[in-house]
Image (cartoon, rainbow, N blue to C red; front, side, top):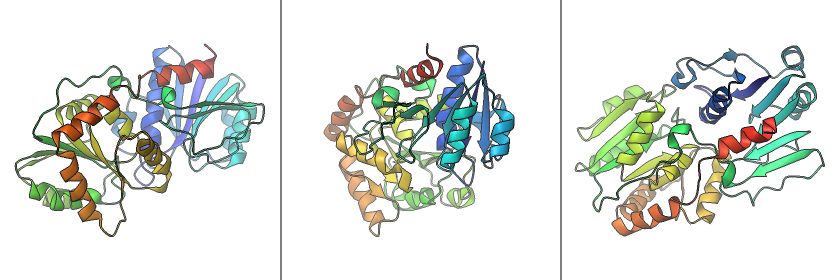
Length: 327
């Protein structure tokens, strides 16, 4: 038995797929089952992929799939790029296939579709009799370090803020936040997470202030510690949001790419935040300052702590792999 995970990511695509698929990979390995990452994209220096079995190839071809999938293989696909024909081939060639989809991208062939989101009401998946759907918060994918994590205190006054714009900061927002936010609040320590796919590190370092600590290519343990130490975070509206929820860390979300729209809709519907900022807003600076002033209020942050603590139980990965392997 072997589980093969087909996905994409890297400096030009982003690290969201790689991050959540690495959690699935680890769950499989922990069950003493062989797993393989098959990744399209430039993944040089993506630190969290170390010590994993990886094939860094262009797998978007019939020839590759026909040559590398057998009837003994279980397959997981997490892609915004693969055409429907690739899914059909993977479904036909494998013992069983599972597809991660949080945007309703395709009508899928035989297999399991997982939408690991807080709210899936905006997506209508077609019933075809051969596709099983696993949707909602019970399937949210968390890295194992974030399971059963609880915040122990809420500071009345804001002392520390986390800034995390994903693995690549594709909209070059970190330097802007340093200039417009960190400079105005010299009494607050800002922890800025820099991924190894950032292309703006020099600009960030040039705008570093005394109240700013830069953290390069940190592991999951340090990320969790930073969240728990922070009074709130300014974050891209991607997978990091679920880890902030798991650590009960209030946050200001910024939508940086169109495929985050369903995540954005779900956190608004659950009243997790009052608004989400769009990266290309003409009033971006003003909107950031408005949300910053709002989240500085102790009672406001306390109210969200109470909401966050009941949203995610942390067992989504186990449920997903159980369904794939029919445990």
